[in-house]
Image (cartoon, rainbow, N blue to C red; front, side, top):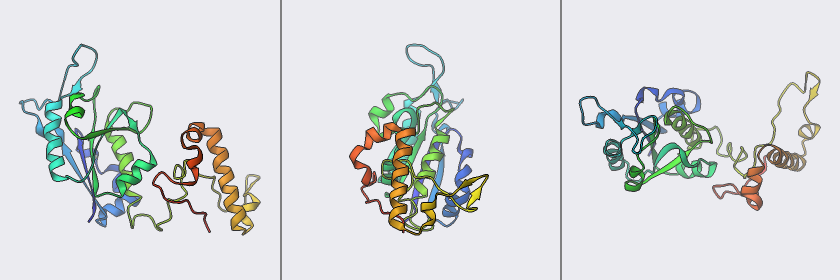
Length: 245
């Protein structure tokens, strides 16, 4: 059965967008996954199709209404009972590769895209929605974040990448950034490919890649070292990391 994605949004025309290109686009055309964009305004009850109102307690901007969103959410939850629903919001938990693998291994996902100042908190209290953030910054809306999340999931679906092992040594799979890559020409602007990568000694190459991954992570993302510590030999999904042959 195809991986089914449903996006609840005020801008359904934004989809599939980039997801209609490259790996995700080919997989979509091949039926490996499906995508439906649900217009939230279709669930508004007034003549103006209002989905937001002024924030309680005052302040700038508008807040998405729980009653309107709940009607849309309930419809999607009924259609996809086994798929988790996430809400893209800066107030959510950080998106990790582990969570991406968890989602990609399931039947699909439903994504609620936040807009304006945010979503009435009562919606999260009343419905099984998991708030998730793709980073410590603010976007104009959750649609861009939803596209990033779906791209990360779709590329892990069986048959999307060329080889099943293609994603095993990527950044974050073992709690580290990925090692640096090189290709031809051997020398470019006076810079040469490290000799160990031309040695043919797979054990030495694997050791070098591990050393470089650890060094780059320690330099660029020390938080990952602290977060994963001794778990670096195991991916967030629990799979053993294997050295390339």
